[in-house]
Amino acid sequence: MKRRKFIVSSALGSMALNSDDLVSADTESPKAGFDGRKIGKILIAGGGFREAFIRYMADLTGKDRPRICYLPTASADRPSGIISWFQNCANLNVVPFVQESFISSYRMDQSFEDVLLSMDGIVVSGGNTLNQQAIWKVQGIDLILKEAWDRGIVLGGASAGSLCWFEEGTTDSRPKEVTKIECLGFLKGSHSPHYDAEAARRPLYHKLIKSGELMPGYACDNDAGIYFEDNEVKRVVSTREEAKVYYVSKVGNDVVEKVMEPERID
Image (cartoon, rainbow, N blue to C red; front, side, top):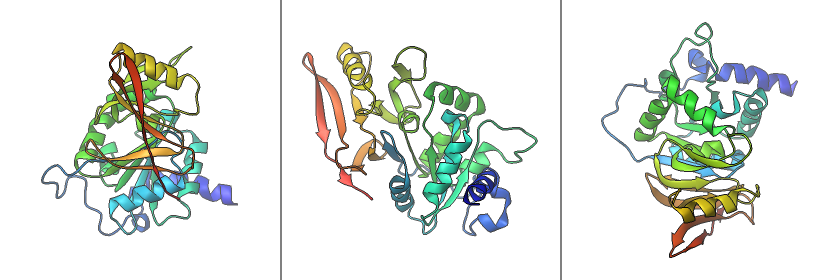
């Protein structure tokens, strides 16, 4: 019974803007009342953007019951991920939505812009970052996310959902090996997610920074993350005691990891 409830919620989530009972009364139309750029807010995690991170994102919106949309492009709109999204939101005071990217004109009667710019927060799924970036570009979602960032809509995610906001980083989106990828560039520098969870991540990140192929940047263990305002680190957080965040750079001929001790959030 519970599984059926979440499947129904998932279907509603992708078209919730058509349902009067799911739309809060104070929601502005996407093009209304925007006079200039606000502080850009991004919350990332190396892996594991679950209930505690969603709660923190909700707090960052400043809304009593924020509208938060899950954007699972990188996971090809996988149903199990959408179900997990609603499960993670079930105990939170948020209105959860889903915006799928693999859509049809016959079953989506609003634009990506209409949906995404009406949200208070947007969480990007993990998955294949290369495919995510390609789909976003052809659909214009990359430009919509930039406008969302400029409007102060809180953006975030883990894995592909953290990497996507940086200029560049390391990805497992191609065959055979982990490689470099260029992304949206809202956040300056590079990023490596899953720093403690996948054996190839740390040595490749060091190698590419040492050679100059990658800029210095931030590496996040699973369950650890960073909250940025524009490009300034405002807070480092984790949901697991051992999880860490690192600033990785080249000093002389050596690659140096500076540990950024996180605060625990639950």
